[in-house]
Image (tube, rainbow, N blue to C red):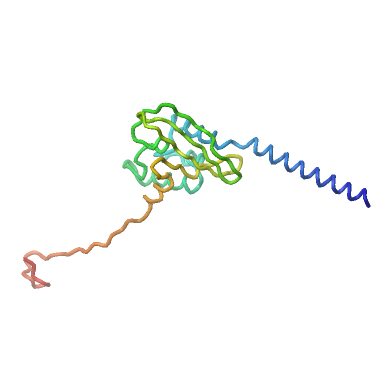
Length: 185
């Protein structure tokens, strides 16, 4: 009986060790949140996923489904006009003179990660807070928080809100002298 219990205990331990080793290997293969942001900035120099309408996969490569859908919709609906994004979302500016650019790993957990991007634009220090979520063996950017309290997700969502207004329209029959209704003027 003791031998069966010992064999069972050893088998359970081996399964546990194997599962832990597989989990560690999976994490090692996973692209780090920092590398996702580094790759996005590198891609942005060649062909930005923002403001383009030819390659949806380019947007999906870096962003969570919700954020990718909003970025894609904004680019497609704005056409040649300015959409919700009034500047470059990766620098939170329209004009740029970037110095001291750095990408730092923030916190990384099982369900969320943070990457901090710092730089000086025209001498003014700025920090962008990238918030990422796991997606398979990589991470996807779920939002970018800016120094002024805005976020990329918030800007895009706010632009989607249907801003409608009720307006009364009055039609006036010219030269009618009040025959069809109240006389005006």
